[in-house]
Length: 216
Image 1: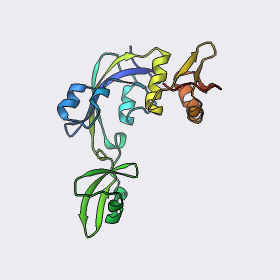
Image 2: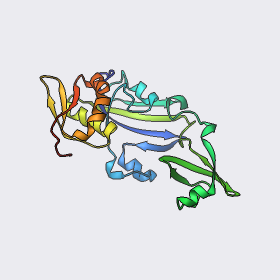
Image 3: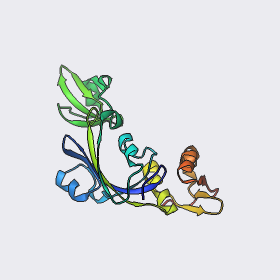
Image 4: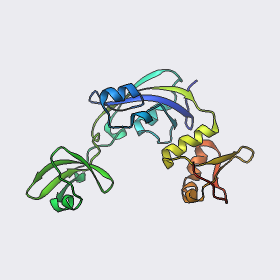
């Protein structure tokens, strides 16, 4: 059985750059590499093939693959984390860091305005900061295996929630009318915005019921 666009599949993988692991669904590897992640949440993931739920180069390679077979792929920067952009290297006054009660030193990584940045140098009241993704400009390798194809509508919906909503909300499945009915009114704008994309992926309409229900 080979995968095709819009299939939902469960995959396990390990990503490397310069032979160093930067991402994995394998708990033992994450522990051994001391990756800065919550180990208990590491597990195989469910994605929809061809719908940008992975890096473009990785996503492109999923189509036409066999279930249960191991693969190794090499991805160039343009299809991975992008090329390094000199415009994302900024010179900032030290006072900005002082106001945030930060003490920048060269080599440290910090979060500024919801962006992860690396301090390159500190001198004369100025701080040079690199806002490029740490993996920008690097070629990466992934070894992966597709464990199974997902047929359960419920599993598919929860996979979409995990990826796009970052949390799960209660819903009912109306098989007859091919509708997914969410119960929490507060996500209505998001559901309306994503409805067409989701429908293209699983051929169900996404709606929010009139009555508000508890969040899961």
